[in-house]
Amino acid sequence: MNARGALGKYGEQLAARRLAEAGMTVLERNWRGGRTGEIDIVARDGDVLVVCEVKTRRAVSFEHPMAAVTPAKAERLRGLAERWVQEHGGAPPGGVRLDVVGVLLPERGAPVVEHVRGVA
Image 1 (cartoon, rainbow, N blue to C red):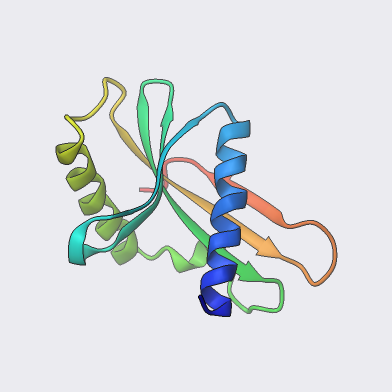
Image 2: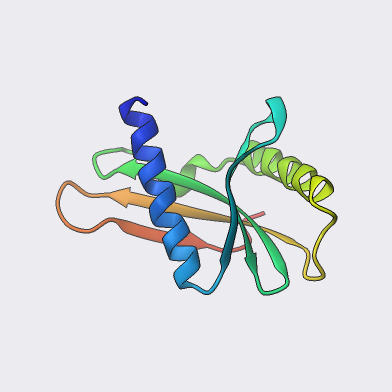
């Protein structure tokens, strides 16, 4: 695994922990939807299915992690969410929500983990 992959995996671990601390149940990580892409985290928040994109950046980066989720990326996530739901027996009563967790890693100190619910 390269440094970028290790950075992303670390960010996903922090994100999964944050979601669990918020009372969500992580159902799956790094689910691949064929050639269309990957869902970083699939979780359950009560009766809502949460498809979560995780973006991790070092503090020296010029772009905030949340800025990396463009409208095109959100559209691709919606398609992946539909595919996941089809393959796992349908949508739950509360429907499906897309969330983003941004992880910022400063040179010193603790990581900053920001969770935004319902981005698209």
